[in-house]
Length: 341
Image 1: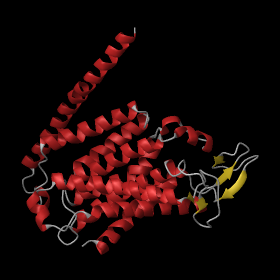
Image 2 (image 1 turned 90 degrees about the vertical axis):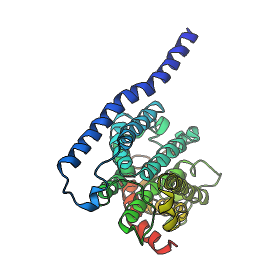
Image 3 (image 1 turned 180 degrees about the vertical axis):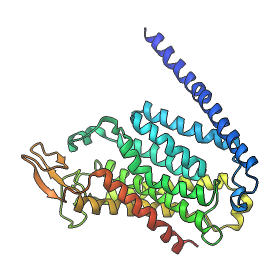
């Protein structure tokens, strides 16, 4: 019985890539044929956009296959539910279509944050009233974490087209601004996830409230620690690192030689992760209710036996994540423009 089950699992692992390819290849080719037909019947398009009208079949294959793979992987690992997988597929489609660097940011966030969510989950179960095994994300969480980045990617597609470009505010201001905004949105979400999921269960001392420096129980909205701030910067650095290596491997060497240096994007990612975590903590400490119940578990709603800690019941965790990513996505390009060599 054991060997039969094992053989069936091995067979499913072999068949999965085949099934994904069987779905992705015809869909991607359909997109490519429509794209070629459009460019053929509209030859008088604007020259600025005409260069990007005909998208290669390889990119169409990637925009279908990669999001499908990530969605199935997330479902298998129970990192997302079916609603999150469906919305995540469409977000991945847009991000991959615009630039592989944007896909790299999504990939860095999704994989590392999923791992961070499962880190020492037995301790989080004791701290969180609404703890969910595996941290499955639904469509609301996916939207709040990736919505701002996807919106900027749509603007990138309409304004710049699709394709990879180096960060250079002198030569490619609009594409650089939008790409740094997308990087910032994901760095913010990743930094905050690392801070809350890793910083909460590492160390022995209780965190302090970011607005008053008063010691609060672990899991309190707005509670931070030095370890949490450090790992939030590291989470953002990882997103920047993924972006950096993708630029090096996808942009033509001749273009990179005359462009501005690309290594600062790693540091910009770290800044986005740290600043995003701080903004999230400030919003959580002031506009998100935190209390502790009789079981010494932090809750987000007042009730019988709940002792008030901080905040007001105005925003929930999803709203805080969304507002933080919007704030970082809109401010980080300006910071990058000022400090870029």
